[in-house]
Amino acid sequence: MKRYIILAALAVFGCSNNNNGNSHEYDLGTGGNGGNGSDDGGGGGGADMAGGDMADVTVPPAPTATHVGATGTTCCMVAGSTRAAYLLNPTGTTTITGELHVVDKMGVDKKIDTGVTAAGFGITPGGKSIIYTKPSGTKASLFWADLTTATVAPKTVFTGTAYNATLAFAGFFSPSGKYFVVGVLPAGVSRSPDMHVIDTSNGNDVYQRLNGEFDYVEAVLPDDTMIFQDTAGGQSAGSTPVQTLYWISLPNAGSSTAAAISTHTSSLTPTSDNKTLLYLRTNGDLYAWNAMTKTGAGTKIASTVIKFTVGPDATGPAAYIAADHSVHVVGTDGTKLLDVAASAATSADLLSQIVLAPDGGDVFYFQGYETQNQRGTLLRANVKAGATPVKVGDKISSADLNVLDNALVLVRNVDDLGEFGEAVKANRDGSNIQSLGMMVPVGGLNVVNPGPGTWFAMHLNTAVKDPTAANVPVNGSAALYGALSFEDNGGAAVTLDAKVHAGAFSFAADDGRTAAFVTGATWNATAKNYVGALQVIAARDPNAKIDGKVSGCSELGPIVGRGLFVNAPTASPAGVYYVTF
Image (cartoon, rainbow, N blue to C red; front, side):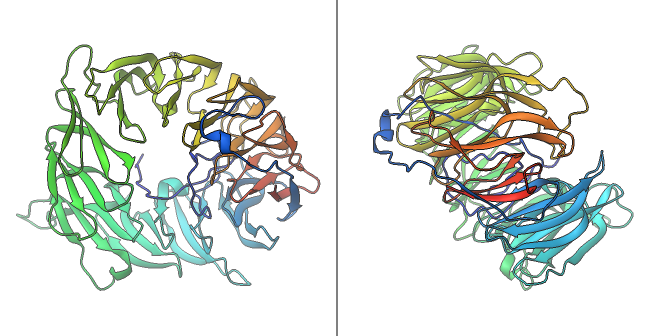
């Protein structure tokens, strides 16, 4: 599977979102395959007065629900802050298709097309247009439509040549929402798609790189500078192909030529301010390239690098694992901050993730990492003190490692199938570990850090797989359910509900201080999903659960501005609702 780099954007899938308290414009998405990317978080009983929460004056929710979409069985919702896309009356078993609609929070619903694939549509960041697919054999046709017009007139962009009917695999939106980068297979080619860039204001194909370029890495910065790999040469006898890293300004792509940055590159990541790009060459040299001036090849800041990450601070730093299994932290200007020599007690697994704390003060990495089970022995080293690494714990899930400003919230003791483990919280140095629950699904820990010294978490406890094999959610979410637990850095755990579907809960995407979840998960054959009643809470008082005014609910959009879209296929009337509180 191709891994896409999407910068400063968030894709919303079905019932869950991973927000970590960040604020974005949420009119985007890449299809409704719910349950993906769930990092849940929680807090104690009653008003939490620990840390930064002493200043929390969140107004208690007072929900109002309005039916805004078409009436009927709906599924596979992809929602933003102002619009939601969904399928009406979906049909099929292996391939789910339906009538594609887009509705805004004022109740203006527009039919877009029929025969559209579940997980095959996404609204652009900003909500002005939609990209969607229809299956065509093993490929797909790709369409674009303007959502701002009174009558929607879809435009065919590619007929039967789009790389994949699942939009998340077919391509990705630029952070600005102005472009969609997509893989296209020309006639006679079954693999190695070409790269095409679609202008989302009009659906035009404005830039192309042929000969299988889409197999390489692409990234788009917020200023619509695209960084990508391609092969230079090799198209004629005696010409040697050289993998090369390029950049081009997409707004000027029609009148300019891509400029080379370096050759023989592998991975790349920008700093959070997007002013510096770090890229790794295949010989192990790590470079920092000025993404503002866009000149030269940049400055080499490290060698023998196998894997690296960039810290969440505006300018890094960068942490990396070297070929000899040693661990290092270095500033983007090349300043050495930490060197951990390889030894039996301190070396890093070359397959390990490496994570920096929000302030860059601690680095975390794994030993004995098992990629199949996403688990390993977690080590932590204090960057500023240069201390010897210490072990945090064993069989820790890399998918659920949440390094916060003052704490760790993670899943340990992952089972041998890589499915369930024990949720715990600890001080950031790994001390004072306390259990938060057992049989927690791997990848199902939802944590937010909305203020200094303040975090909330939600997750399922005693989760089980649905014993009925036929109960497969139509939106691709997991057939798992369990008791929904809420914790924070202060109080005791609160059980929010005894039976909640995996992914059917989330924190507010803008401030992290409110949350929504669907209670009483019950399988419904008509909806082909688990349905229940919506409830909302303020994180400072999780015991005060408030009726969300929608029943028969299966999917939640992101909470933005104290409002969210809710898919309720068995409500009366059935369909999509917009809830404010």
